[in-house]
Each structure stands twice: as structure tokens, then as C-alpha cells.
Image (cartoon, rainbow, N blue to C red; front, side, top):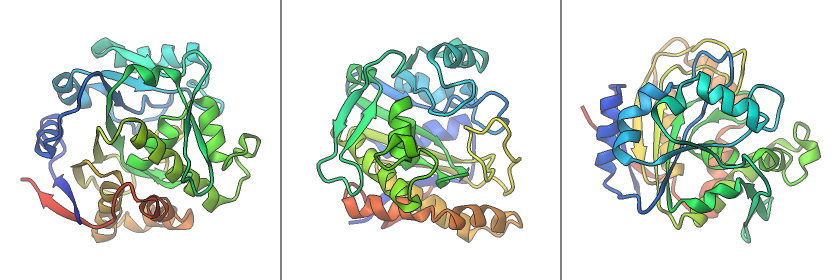
Length: 288
């Protein structure tokens, strides 16, 4: 059965909220709203004022996790300071899920590569999750979208290293590449299981650099903005974004595709689909 993915070429805070409402899934209880807080110096991440209308409507708590690499977000103290500098807590309550240990361990009995996932223990305070993703390239994953937000994004600092290392955190930058991509798919599935499928995904195809928002020094966007997508299926929404890049006629497309293809980015989608928590088959419903 095909998933429904809503799509608009208009990229505004109002349109993000409209597409969220189109999805028609009520998120129960306390809602965690996963964002990317943006590394210090990064010029491409989507700012809090862009997301404000939707976050206000949902009424949840913005959540983030510390990073596993050097920068301004790898300790709770530094990350909280940067969250303030970037204005997140000016508008919203913000919860660093792994601000204090110990991590919560999620079992992945059917994982292809990893059998457990480490997330910030504060996740137990939430009943559902809205995953707000900035779709763009990524130095290691090839691209970043909903599946990366669910896996690396929700992983604790240790959990990020565990995923990157395909179960061996000491191999954070040296693990087998496809095993890392499959570990992301495994980890994403564990978060979906944890929330019993009570998640909604929004991907925004704007400011698309080949680099992630985790890069302090990132390339400027290389391809024209494409639009906003919303779905209850993280695999379908990421596949739709990839397909929209391929369909683009913008002269910057080859540069972004080179990043995605050279890192075998689609393999994360393939691995996730094989695990069965979503589908690559979708109907794109365009909203004016």
C-alpha cells in the first residue's frame, strides 16, 4: 500500500503548518518536537522563527541531543549556550534529552547491524514525536532527512558514536560505510517502535547544501529550493525528496547528487524499507 506524502512548492511557516494539518494525525499526550539546533557558524539550518507556527500549534517541547564530535554542541553546557544563542528557548521550552546520563537503551531485536540504540533518557517524558527535518546533503550519510533525524538525531552523544561505528563506537569514523547506513535504519526503527508509530514527519527542501547543519563550515546551498513535504511515513518522505532532486532542472543538481550517490545515501532508505516500518512507494499529493 502506498504512503501519502503531501508536497507544496511554497516554503513558508504557514505552509508548513498547513501540510502538518493535512496529514491529519493527532499526536497524543506530551509531544517531543525534534529539530536540528544548528552548529555554531552554520549558515543553512532552519531557524526557530521558521518553525514557530507549527510548533506553537502542536504545543510540544523542542528536543535535541548532544553531538559525538568536537564543536559547540558536544557537551550539555556548550549546547545549551548555543541553543540560547540561536534563539530556540526564546520561543519554546527546550529539552536536551541526554543532558544527563545514563542513556536509555532501546532494543532492536530485528536490527540488521545493531541490536540496541542509545537515546537520551528524557525521551521517557514524551508520548509522541513531530520530526522536523531540513533536507540537504550530508558528508557521511549522503543526505539528511527524516531517517537521519530519527536515528543520529535522537541518539545520545554515545548513541551517535554507536550508530556511526555500526555497534563499535571507537570506530566512529572508520566503520564499514554501508553498515553505518544500515545502523541508521536500525536505530530509526527503534524510535518508531518506542513511540508506537505516533510520529509525523516534515521535510523542508530549502537551503540545500551538500553539507549538513552539523558542519560549522558548510558549503553554501548549491541547488534551488524545492518545497515542503509532510507524511506519517519516514521512508516515503525521504524517498520523495530524493526523487524531487532527481526531477529538478536546476544546474546545481549534479553537485548535490554527487554527494548523495558517492556516499550511497539511498541505501539507508533501502535498509529501512527492508525492515518494514514504511514503504518507498508513495503518492505525492501536491498542495498549492
